[in-house]
Amino acid sequence: MLRVKFSIVLMFLTIFQILEVKPKVIFPNVPDIIDRDSLLPQDFKVDDPLLEDQDPEVTPNLFQGDIALNNDIFNYWRVGLRWDVFPKRLWPNRTVPYAISPLYEPEDMITIYQAIQTISRITCLKFPKWNGSQKDFLLIWPIKYPKGCWSFVGKVGGPQILSLQPPDKSGPNCLGGEGRAIHEILHAIGIFHEQSRNDRDRFVKVIWDNIIPNYKGNFEKQSLDNTTYSFEYDYNSIMHYGSSYFSKQKGKSTLLAKMKDEKIGQRRALSQTDCLKINELYGCLDDVKLAKKYYTLCRILGI
Image (cartoon, rainbow, N blue to C red; front, side, top):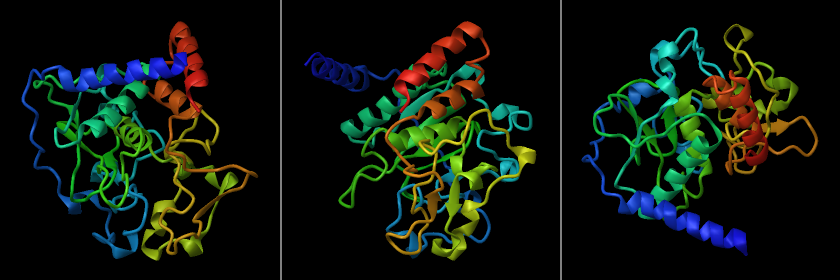
């Protein structure tokens, strides 16, 4: 009963923070930087009808479904960006200013806000609201073209688009819960998909025959030359593909776990490893006292 009361109080506090506090600045317009061709790898189709019934992380038809990549990092990406190659892709001072589009319905704003608060609560990252003067900030917007859930990886500079398609008559899309918003925010702070790890073949089997031919490249793994891993492979990662992503037939799996009874591709919450990965990426574990705090938080609050 106490937990229910606490949840109700938390919900009302969240609504108050989002809706009742008057903004100090006018909301930014969507920047004119969305050039679909520049976001797509070569040979990818635009609005491929084969993707119409796929997951909303797949339908944007970007690199690996939901990743917008600039050409300068295409050959250097990893599960976490190579900061020795692209140090400017880290958000400085562990701070990610953000703005949420006023086009979202209040309940969708709350979902996005809760996703941001979840990450800030268990990591050393700070997410202040954009004050109107910061040059680099995360701009969360319901982009219609390409629609779906997608993001750049790491800081790219300026008003940085992160697209979350709101619910419609076809379903919840990117905002049926916090999970998909968390997934895309993790891309924006520098995390790639888990199944791209070089060691993934020890843990999952790719069913190549079930993948739509033009999208087999999305299942390529990275070489050890540009990937390093501090944590074990995580089936439970919120950054792992689902079992039927890019399947050419509904119900057919494209990925299978090699370990018995393991499920892949959850979009409920950060796993313990997701939590630790973020904290390590931004140096939150470098200090012994802080490390103890964040290891504890990740263990208790990660699923």
